[in-house]
Image 1 (cartoon, rainbow, N blue to C red):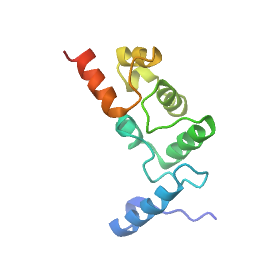
Image 2 (cartoon, one colour):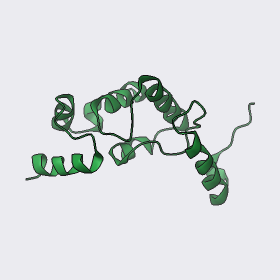
Image 3 (cartoon, helix red, strand yellow):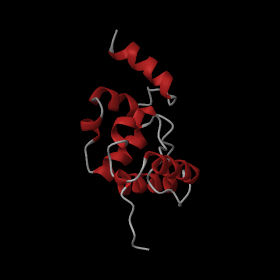
Image 4 (cartoon, helix red, strand yellow):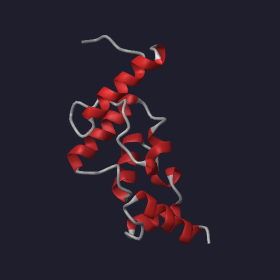
Length: 121
């Protein structure tokens, strides 16, 4: 099928229903690239990428067993590869180093507490 839907040109109600449907596809090959599959850690990076890039990231993560609801270096490195952007341009260099050394908790809220303690005190 070659028909495309411009999500910017449909009603809020229609957009919401498509997002709900796609949420059911998160974690499957049927994911369309509309619903969120990531935690707050990746929000600012993934909300602005294209639907095609989201699908690519989701499908590669699925094949590699990478969970974007967790905080981790593998997630940032996958984003870097797909988006063709260095990790260091997406996150702080010290934070990236700490991720690589497994110093950052995998849980987002615990990671925030860790960052507060390490970087801001």
